[in-house]
Image (cartoon, rainbow, N blue to C red; front, side, top):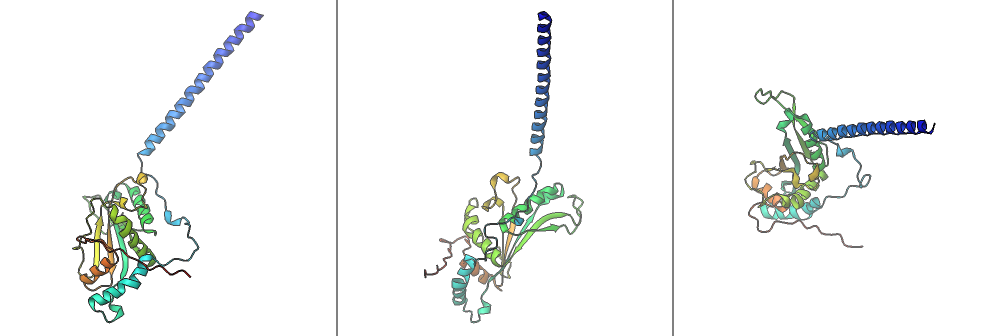
Length: 258
């Protein structure tokens, strides 16, 4: 009887060990399959997130006057009127809007890339971009009429002044081998356009989340009728043009303590 019981115990132990090994193999197989799924998913384009719908720390609070707008009203207007001899205050040029255009040619084959570009523009500007569609069909590029191939943002008011302030003080110094902005990009009607090669110059962009480097065109639309007036306006607002020994730094008078 004792011999039979020992044999049964040994058989049960062997069977349990085999069953555990089978479970371990299944677990390893499942882990391998999961790992393979993660590796395969790393090559795909990440899903875009709409950051404009998130609440921020200043939600519900009154909007403060932009620093650069205060500098324009207190200092720049008087300097321009004195420099060009404007007698009518309505003749003094001002900044009307800032337009950012970003074309994504690869969106024809990879539509998800445009979603990421829209997300990044929303982070940079603080408002939701508008998708731009192709006006014509081009067979050589595989492009069809009405297909999304880019995005644009038009900023006015407080967002416009805040973007210009961040662009002048933070983004421009981060441009690689920066030696100043060109002075030959005026269109003859008081508007200035420049091209950016990398979106990484803006501090809102996380370097680890960037999948592809892309550029953009930024247009500063002013109410000036001549390029000389627009140049003086942008220079007074702090735009670091090429050839300036010391760029103009806006200084805002701080309110006196009560």
